[in-house]
Length: 77
Image (cartoon, rainbow, N blue to C red):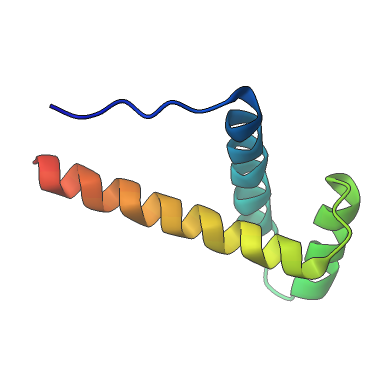
């Protein structure tokens, strides 16, 4: 039996925003010749984030969450 995870509305909203940033960053930098710095600046402006480091932290946080979800799905099979 798995224990349900309860999250506040704010947590759910942040996770949704973080995933959008993660997906958009990866999509934009997949274009050959694209500047990662300019992509980061674009996302900072779009999502009203004041630090490039925050974009990095968000991307790392989403990667870790996706990795945990993937590991969990392998354990259940």
